Length: 72
Image 1 (cartoon, rainbow, N blue to C red):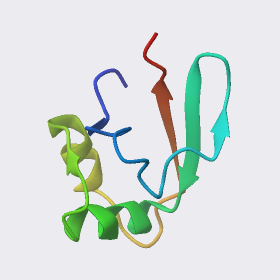
Image 2 (image 1 turned 90 degrees about the horizontal axis):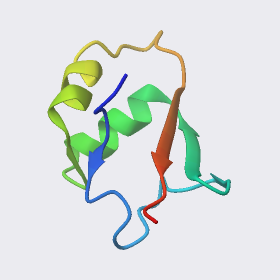
Image 3 (image 1 turned 30 degrees about the vertical axis):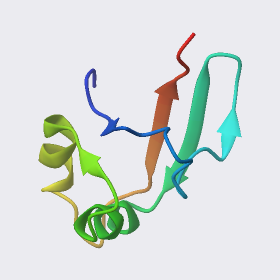
Image 4 (image 1 turned 45 degrees about the vertical axis):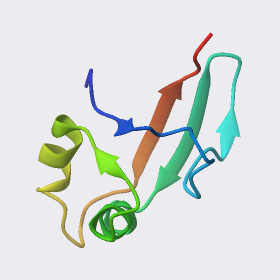
């Protein structure tokens, strides 16, 4: 899904970021409800598309893979 992301997602090294690094991307996997808790606590400002995705989260939602392209 294009355009889904965290605004200001790299500055300050957020605690959810990154677990794995490749040449072009940062990666992490997180339980959906944990990401929702972090955002609800005001730690991050999600993009509109991510807000839409998070609105459908419940306790049965699978882990989310977070992938961010490195700025070159």
